[in-house]
Length: 190
Image (cartoon, rainbow, N blue to C red; front, side):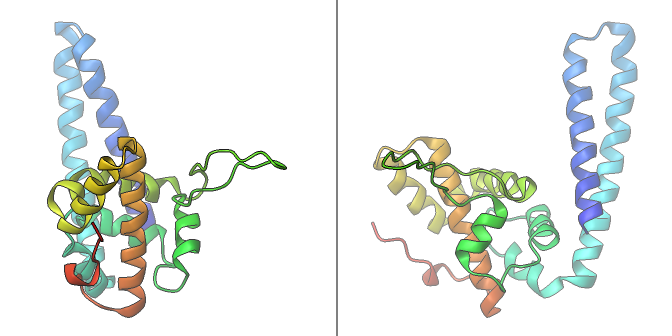
């Protein structure tokens, strides 16, 4: 699963590079670049089919639970299951550190610095962050949490990172308890 997810990310990076070249390319090169993009699209679709088949054959129950959450799709499920096999077996704090979503201190002596996220598994962090871009619009639990933090004056990127952290905690709890998604189990106080 890790190999398939990693290969998909590589192909998407290549497609992005080719698409970026297209805008500055002359007419003579546009056909070549377009052909490469079409080939990459076909290969990405094939890899996504392989990921889907792997999810169904090895992680069907867990993937079904995660996929029921608005904002979490099959690729996010695949990344979480492939790169966070510890889900459900570690504490929420440990899961956040592994994913690179735990705010870590930058203190020295009496000086207290800002808390920042860093380290961890960047593919998990970036995938959850991108999933939250959709989830804060369509998932009622994430929307309420997002709107509350925005109203408190937090910067948008900080809010999306906090939403990704919250979603990771929810996924960890779901994996630990084997329960399906239930919006009522994740209330957000106003």
